[in-house]
Length: 380
Figure 1 (cartoon, rainbow, N blue to C red):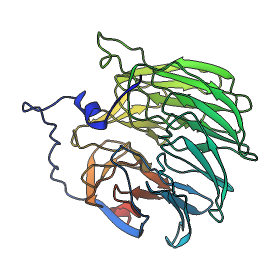
Figure 2: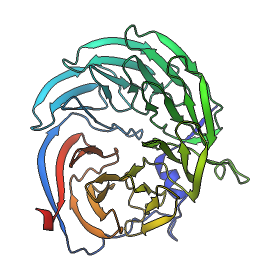
Figure 3: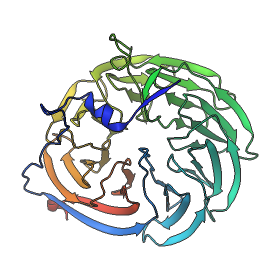
Figure 4: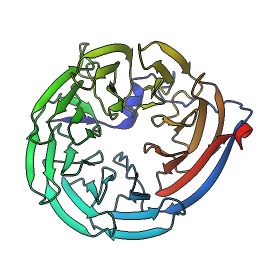
């Protein structure tokens, strides 16, 4: 039977205080060089769940789509935050919203996938998959791809709701509670798994095209051998980046799956890039930047250790991350210099930040949705 570790146990891998309790680093003094402007905010409903959901909102079609743990899915005008519709599914939704053109897809704790009209919120179909869906389903023009917590990938027809294929992957005995969101294009599906592998599939039939080992399990105990990839792989041009817990960050050729470079690190968060560097948040909440071309260290920032940071987001020369106390932190993308912060919401923030052009979308743990403009004072 599969064993699951909760988030606090993962943080314990990074080290504890002498009393055995994790203590976040105090907020550093900062001469705030950033202007934070709230464009709009909305209450979406019940927010996150104690089972460590990551209800990431989506941005598509000039609209923002968000959901809460009670199955309320809502659409908002991106510019004004005006609510356009709300659909009440009466399900325990769990995996965030996937959006593409005319449709949205969400998953549930009971292993259901629901397709909705992006225009009206009307339900199109429901399909049962193998088990819990803890990451957002992803879509192309013909397919919904779902990564379930048992390590399976499911390809479902948008037109009919019929299951077209299933990809089974070897699953470790002990893993963290979570699963990565796949990359889905018209010609390729790229998914990362808890055994430390990255696999590319043909979206038409689910047949593997290539696979690459991101991390190799090592150590005597199952805990030491955990190499989960819970952060989503990142596509930048012809490169794909992926990183694992207690493993490595790797750069891989999108076409062939050939590994180009690798660096030792440990993360369970999403990655970000500005095309020159790839940014990540480590398991102990260090922010790191690596050169896209050769993997060389660009900078490291250790001023937010153990603050339970989200993965980084890149917006116009700035790297942003949020923490469990509800602060949004801002760094310089070129140097890693700490530029400023703002308290957004006291309930904390653990969902990945969503970039919307020159703005950032933030979903708090209690279900409030914010759109912020973040700029340097010299530019405002």
